[in-house]
Image (cartoon, rainbow, N blue to C red; front, side):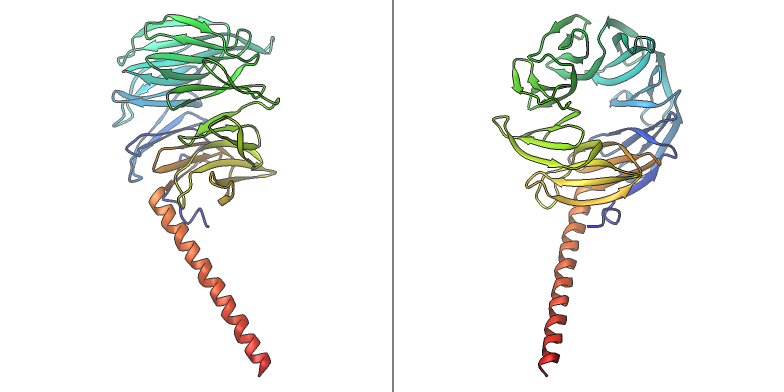
Length: 357
């Protein structure tokens, strides 16, 4: 199937795309490597575009505004017109931002080139007006940030590893996980936090679920029933007993996300770097087959909701696929393929008749 022909919307950020966000109303916010932040509504109309201090790393939103980490800064913008509401420099690189119950949380980290390691990190809390409520420092860099039951959970690197449980008031409690390796990925799986580790382990807050085999977990997804473990080249679906039920080798993965339902199958959308070209592949989680693919510039980020998939590439292109339209094109392509096969069969039969005559 021609994915470009089935694309619902294609827009340009005019610089490499580094971060994406899509809300429940299908509004899309894209951030770039040079600091541009743009918002399109559900119909594809550009609402605004602004310039932030540096590369956009993470985007979040709530009823009070849109929030983005950009270089050293955490920025808050008016959702309607993009006007800057407030902006704060953090200590070191501003990394991940999220919102919980009207509060804005962000992580930061300081990297020491001489020691080739992170020497300080922090979790910051601001209210909707931009007032700093508290900041908590830690020696380990948080690589993941999740909320569960009113607490934040930060997946930590060396030296302590495990997770830091942080309350809304800023109380921090370290919790060890059943793995000897740094946390590299996380997902909320039906109300349970699951963590991936640099050695391939999967753990919950209570126990080890999967023994790793040395390959770092780059991402964890789920389809509501199954966990999906991603390393640098493979998509590994786990059964309800956490045993491998499906593995698909797709190539060098640069970005990955859950996708929309295509032809009654849940899907995974992944960006692949293939020598000098980028590829987008759509993989069925029913049987592991490739449903569709297309060439693109290198794909750095993919996000989705239940109805749309959004990708951003290094040429600044933002592509959007919508579930109903994609399935119509998919079914139409199937009909066209059937018609072509019938036509080829008729031509063969006619050729045979001519030979008999």
